[in-house]
Structures are given as structure tokens and as C-alpha cells.
Picture (cartoon, rainbow, N blue to C red):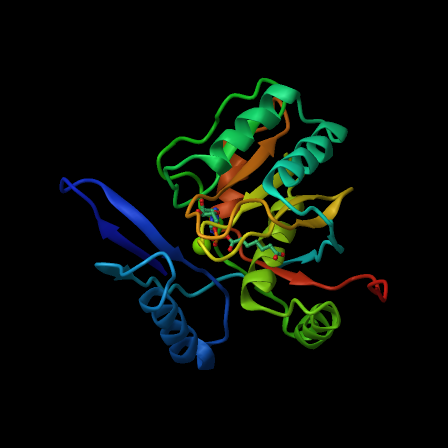
Amino acid sequence: MRAARKIGNKQAEVHISGAETICERKDIDRTASGFIHRALTHPRGWPDRIIVTIEQLYEPPLLVPMLPVRTADTSDPKQALQMVLDTLLRLDVSRRAAVNAIKVITAKRQMRGAAIIDASSGKRCEPDRLRGVRVSRLGVDANARSSLARMLSRRGINTETVREALTLASKVAAHPSIIAEVCISDDPDYTTGYVAAPSVGYLRIPNMKLMGSSHGGRVFFLKPGADVEKMIEYLERKAVLMEIRNPQPRT
Ligand code: WAQ
Ligand code: MG
């Protein structure tokens, strides 16, 4: 689903809401109306168009492991962005690439999808810089749903926002050409973001922005020299379900 509203001249539009999932045939009605409801009640405002696309999958989804979940204790945007920077620099991300990513996720103008940044040069690599790359065809494996809900409930974060972001981050981190991801929600009332990478897990970072601000975004850091087209094909087209492979620590 994607929802948007025209602004000013005919071409420009502001992104309101997007969502994607994988479900069984019997759940299509319920899932689609849930997404439409989300578009109609979104804190980013009233859309003047909602587009719902429903496609049959012709091959079984790939199963990828859920990233382990951790939460940092940052209390303001300065601390939070410093934590983002420090975490990225400990991975194979250059300072230039990290700084460029922070510019993208704190910029006024919203993208519908994610920016892709070369982890070494810091250059943007996605073909459409205004739109970005939209990760699609992802969901939670039926066998993992109840333990996922239990694990998140124990931490008081069993929300659709967290489940969807964790699923997306787990799909993205499973690709060998992606070193790390950073994200801030574009919802004005949601200020927790995250950095994710196989070695870091899904590191939730509170207070990435001030309450009420509508900026946000996502960046994927590309391994230098990796095949960007293949990677985008995986993100946009490959059906992936997140599963829970190792017992989660009881924190
Ligand atoms: N693929 C690529 N980029 C996306 C996608 C997608 N499927 N969905 C959203 N984005 C980009 C887009 O630029 C949005 O503006 C931005 O990410 C933020 O999207 O554990 O809700 O859906 O508490 O607002 C983090 C949860 C929530 C942290 C993130 O992102 C936690 C969130 P939103
Ligand atoms: Mg949003």
C-alpha cells in the first residue's frame, strides 16, 4: 500500500504512508483493509490517493533469521545521532558515508523508500534519488509469530511499528552486500530509530528526533564494489519471511 497527497504543482506529492507484507490467501481482505485504515488515519495527514497492489507469489519465500533486539538509552537527538555515528564507524562504514546518511535521515524532504550509500565513498547509488528503494515482499514466518509477540511483549514493545521495522531490518541485513542500515521513522509522533547490522543486531535508539517533527528516512550501506542492481532486485522482489533461529536472551 502507498498513500500520498499532491502538493503545489501537479507532479509533486508528499509521501504519507506505505506498508507491505506477505499473507495467506484467506487473509487478503483483512490485511488490505487494515492497510487502507492505516492510510486513512495516518499522523502524517490525509492522503488524496491510496494505491493497493496485491500480487500472488509463485515461489516459496526465503527464510532469514530475526536480528537480536537491543535498546540503547539515549535521551536526546544529539546523543542519539552520536550513537548512530559511533556504531556505524565501528562497522566498515566511512565517516563520510555515515555523515551523508545522517543528512538523508534528518532532511526535510521525505523519500518513499531508502537511500543506498556506498559505505566507503559515501556516494548515493540508487537509480531514483527522489523515490529511493522500497523493500517489499516481506513478512513473519507463521511459526515465529507467537514467540515474536512474547519476546516483544516482555520488553513492552509489541507494536506493529516495531514488528514491521524488525522484519524489514532482518530482510535487509540478510543480504551479503549490505553492511548496515540506519532508520528514523517519518511519523511525527514516533521518535525511536535504529541501526541494524548482523554484528550489531537491531539496535533501537530512542529520541532520534524531537516529538512533532515529520522528517525521517532510511539508508542502506552498500559494500564497495557490490552489484547494486542485484541487491535492489532482492530488496524489492525477493519474498522473504523472518524466522526465529536461536533462543532469544531473556532480558
Ligand atoms: N523500504 C524502504 N524504505 C522504507 C520502507 C520500505 N519498505 N518503508 C519506509 N521506508 C523509509 C521511507 O523513507 C520512510 O520515510 C522512512 O523509511 C521511515 O518509514 O524499534 O516506522 O515507516 O521502536 O515511518 C522504527 C522502529 C520505525 C524503531 C520506523 O519507519 C523501534 C518506521 P517509517
Ligand atoms: Mg512512517
